[in-house]
Image (cartoon, rainbow, N blue to C red; front, top):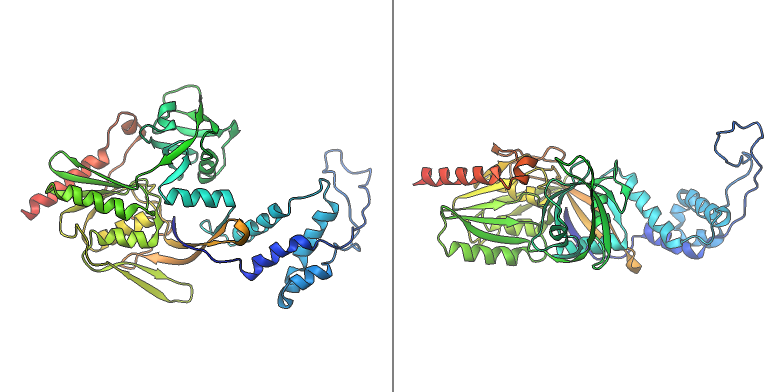
Length: 425
């Protein structure tokens, strides 16, 4: 997720939809019963004579619609009136109708990264970037067929319940997740602290599915943490690019650099992204100067983002770790450090999210629209949309490795870093 939140009001188009709540006039169209000769298994529908028109927009609806849009909006108002006058279960929830209309507009763009976030989803998204959210406390992979647990957070409800890396969530609250986008499944798992979620798990080596009842809690996530590995190698893991990332990263860097490490491994695996400006700031801690990325807009305009001065680790040997779940802002950092020759990248080809989104908050606390505003390119002008970044050194990590507690990607990254140190000696 590479997003820049903008708190602005509804656009005129969405304002019209909200205004619709007060204007649902019109008339009920006539209908006749289906023919008795209809096949027994045919849908039970009412045949409407072609001469019968849908309820026309009322005077109030027309007044609420800008004159230049009235013809375009006529089918929308007709549908609105049909629902209010003919739908069997009344009254309908006008707010849900408006949310559905907004969702439909975003879906019509055909862009998987442009979408409507209802108020709850929007709140969850903000919470995660602020470093805290309510859920079960697990890192997950949403690029797989089923939502897959990568690892559990220490002391989290997920760890206490016994979830393991590699577990596949095949049902949530006994609802089958087959064919359900893994990101949507993730949103079903998170929820208010104190509430329970039932997960049905497929685990490698188990012949039957496992059932877990997990009580959600408030999860506080450190977006940047570090430690010193054997051989004097500093290891820094970034889990997101959020509100606290830079403060936590600088703290980790200062602490580790005081130990005079031989080099640094920057782990961006399973990092789904975050804020654009944070990606630039993170890159600047390791890249003394140069281009971080380009933003390419639809009108041909290109904006350049360059490294900011004052980085704490611009000269020390550096290796970057990525995998299939490294996306967006994580790919920006890895791409900049790779293209500049600052670091070698180790792991697996990344997710491939090469676009920039902005979050536009809607009025009346009705959530937000998330819309793609630009494509981004690496310093060498590469696009990674649906392709991903290819690491300099490819190293896989299997489920067997995870279950056994092995990390061949990290092991290889250490080797690459030490080779670099020896070559510079």
